[in-house]
Image: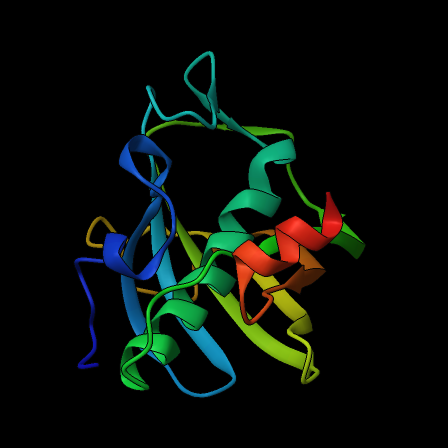
Length: 161
């Protein structure tokens, strides 16, 4: 896909207001950089603020956008994935006022043949009004997220039941 990708919704198995990703700036087979927008009425806004507890969802959408872009490039459908958890989560804020534009970067650390992966992620507050990365961006969170994307979600869910 040609970057920047400004119509990100088809890359994610989300819908409506839960699609927080705004732009995929760049990606390759193991990493992605993009932006997400949190508005005061976003599902992740709490009394008009973006709270630290919501950072994992935004970073997970970065992983999903990467998986979706790679699926699109391979001519495959976008598949559902699962956020399993995190380790080494570092939060550098409590809340910030919405609206706010967030820079998201994800880098694959491990990906096995079953679909289990570990991704190193960072979330920054973008100060540029157009969302461009700059030296003034503030690091909000850093984490290693564990994710799982089975080859066939329906079969996996049947086996898990």
